[in-house]
Length: 127
Image (cartoon, rainbow, N blue to C red):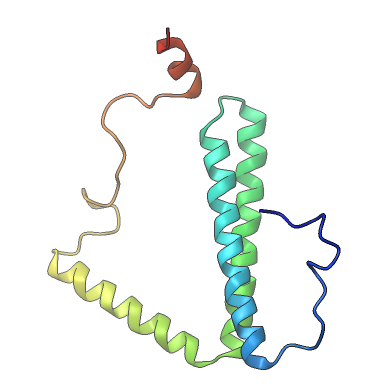
């Protein structure tokens, strides 16, 4: 929940140690991911074309912020990239075991079959 009303929410009583800064950057990454999720959920929940366009644009800007924070984290904690690379290889191995599925394969999406319902459709089916 936003803490804009708390006058001390953005004030740190001292400088952060490098370890604290690394944790803070990880938290910033998580917050940006949460914002993307929220904005895209709102975009998907409306039929208003302008609202959908603005919300999607803002979500994409948050994704750019994630890239900035990830690069900063990589520079602050060089071993971070090693963990990402290890994880990437693990996914590649699992994808190979599945016959290369994963990128656009039949199990890659969880989209329901049939027409996509919109908020307007849902309202029309009530009552």
